[in-house]
Length: 377
Image (tube, rainbow, N blue to C red; front, side, top):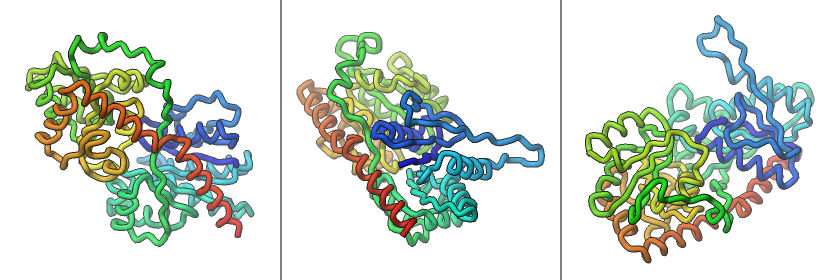
């Protein structure tokens, strides 16, 4: 199949999933065309089946905000005609599904019919898409997609609850590539980060308010009172500076490292003992899955799709949003005993295997075939 993938080219979960999906599809022999305003951060164009087409948005003083949707729609039309693309797979409802629909209509007038698969990732539904200004456009875009998928049952339920949707939504969970040699082959030099006997706790996110970054710091503060530990804070965003101030106020600056955005996630996770994700909500919890794939147990909230990923008492523990005391207690419970920690690490890895890309990829290929069949019946 010749497939165009439209996504945000950022460190966010939707862009990462879309990129990894395209990479695996290319390895399976499909011809994949990424169409976005910048090359995705994880996209390596070393496969002849992979192509990248940049969307250029001309700057016109007339426009207060440059019309990216129009530029994207036009680029999709041009690339479909030039490369014989058979299917569009757009990630994130706004603005990609809307732009994809416009491209479909323009192509139809030229005698070209092309199906569109829309994957819902989370904030495009629960935060941005639910805004009154965007809600009608989001509902329209979803209802006019040929096939719609969501990354969790929780997100599917939210979509039906928040929008007037008349399409069936198929749940295809996010995925990870689980390799037995993945951790063994990494240069895990714990002594570069922590001293002997110290546990390493990690948080990775975009440091937005929904991630409840102060809770991460507060949970760790309770951990370090009982167990020698260090906290690795990976990522960047508006909540980073307040978190740095909180760390100073608590007097634990010597135990917390702020990395900023990093391309060395695997290297950091490979020496991590526990992952913290106390989010207000998560449509899926890809960061938690990435940690578990490297044998790292997770302490998270029970919000959104997290219970579908992190299993209570097996791969970690889940607490109510804001229940710092419970999450800190369970963190200490896992970290305070070597044998117990090893058991949770093994369980986390085993749980992650259920979401291995080789298990999830056939679901997407079946969805593509369904979309092609529906379009041309």
